Structures are given as C-alpha cells and as structure tokens.
Image (tube, rainbow, N blue to C red; front, top):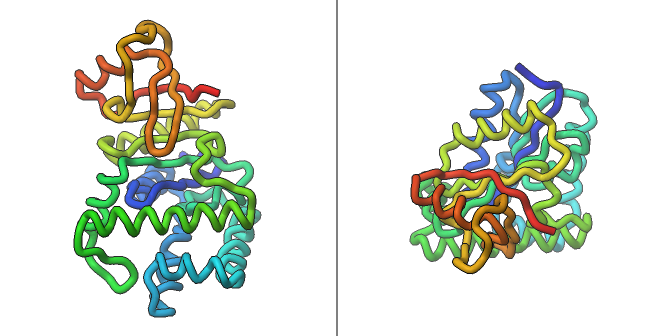
Length: 242
C-alpha cells in the first residue's frame, strides 16, 4: 500500500535502477516516471548518444532547463510516485531518496548485455566502462556547477543500496523497510565482498564504513563483514562514518 511518500531513485549507470523502480512501483501500486527514458528520447531525436547529449547540455542550458522544469512540476504535483532520475532527489524535498551503487565493472557488463540501440551501444566491456565513467562524470560536473548538488555525496540520500550482487527484489525489500520506518539518518546496505577490511581493527564493534568512490573501507565491524561475505550475504546494514 502507498505510504503517501514518493520514492525517488538515483543510481550509477548500470546499477539496475530502472528494474528496481519498476518493481517498486508495482509493489506499491503507484505510478512510475523515468526521466532517463525522456533524456534518451531527446538524445535519439537529435541523432546523439546519451553521452553526446550530456556533453552538449554542458554548453546549452535549454536542455537542462526543460528537464528540470518538468521534474519540478512533477515534484509539486502532489502525486505519490516512484521516480527514476539521477537528479530527482534535488527537486523532491519530501520524498524517500534512494541511491543505488554497483561495482563499475559489473555495471559495464550489464550495459553491454542490453540490446543495442541508436542511443547507447558498446563493442566491449572496456569501452562501456570508459564511456559510462565519462558520462557519469559529465553529469556530476554539470549538476555540481549548476545546482551545487553532488550526486556522488552519499549523505544526499536516505538510503544507499549496493546492487552488485543483490537482486532487484532484495533491494525493493530494503526500500520498503526504510519507507515504513522513516529513519532520520542515512541507511546503508552494502555488499560485504566490496568492503575493504583489515585484520588490525577491532572486530566486535558495529559496522561503520568510510567511502572514497567507488570503495568502502571498514572502520569497525571487520569480523561481521568477513562472516557475512563467507556466508554468501549480498547486503549487510552499516552506517557511514563522519
């Protein structure tokens, strides 16, 4: 059942946010809007790739202004929605803000496995990895310059989920859990195999992590992290250190 609160989902390219947002909207029984689909249509209409449109948008304010006005109008409409967008968290002030992350190499293989189209297609995983990084950085710089909004800053969000090995259903379950409890602090659910641990730090403390994109480092909770990885867990709860 809808909670009355919209959910906006941001994410790395290839993080699976489209699949997660579709499944979440079905579970909640509410409408889903994808700004990414709109952006890809705009690129295709101009005979560009999504990366080329991003680079063009750095020079042409009209593209971002159109998309931003659309998102702002949607945000103020009052409708409870699931929104798939890399900048919706900046416009939807009262929504639950979810950020999906994934290992860059996994993301590249996912994108490479999609059906080729005129907007975005790659011949190899290395090419996809390079172009996805360029596109993400192009967006990050543009958003930072125009809005002072850094999409890679994890504390912009209410929930960060790692989709490297977790299924879309697992991630939707975490989103619904957080949506029901309405936490006041950032919640992290990270793949234990992606967390760098050491043997010298204390073992029995709660799991606290630092983050230097794209890597998480364990500050505490090393034993729990290693045990979770050994047992095949794909997501474990953690907190982000100051």
